[in-house]
Length: 281
Image 1: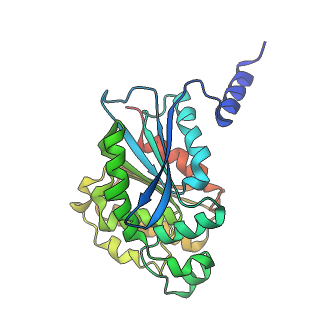
Image 2: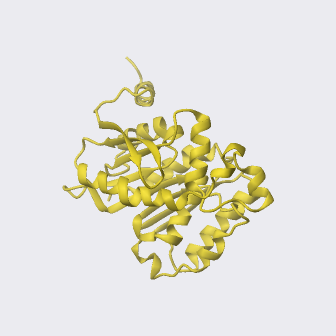
């Protein structure tokens, strides 16, 4: 007879390999964006468990789906093992069909301006430099094209939209918070690259007020302990901006992930962030 620990290990392995004990509904389609003039691959994962409010599900709009899809699709099943979160819809947005396409197109979509400082220019994926600054167009895509479609076609709660972004995705999330905070109610911002253009978004963050953040439900912020000082500075700026407005626990969770660099912090950040944003009541 297998020991309980072995049985759990086998179960986790099956879940991570994509063998499920219950089947989520997965819908894949392409969406041609007029705002960006780009074709996006979209994947929507709808759980089979009933939503917490018995009507509609909260929705997590996930950046960088090209890299994170397998992990994020396994995560709800892992969290469900311990009844750690309520069920939620995942909406994954993929740019391109190769890693080079993805790296270039995410840089275009997630950067709010053209890079002007030496550090940004030297750090950004070189083939994407000329296309930087497309965040405004990407916001128009989300606001006018993708979100209305999701909320028309799926059991999505329009008052429970969650933005999920890491690195440049986190930079874009901060841009949204300063420009259109009402578009999403919850934010997962992992290792946000606020160093872009010499921390120029810091000035916009200083303009945040408690009134402007009243539309926000919860925010999760994280960074890896072993990340660069530029990334750690970015985290400190963002954390301080929220705390100076009085936006604190239980609406805010901030976390420095021990013994982790930029890549190593990613899965922990996403796991902890989803637990915080969608925690079971």
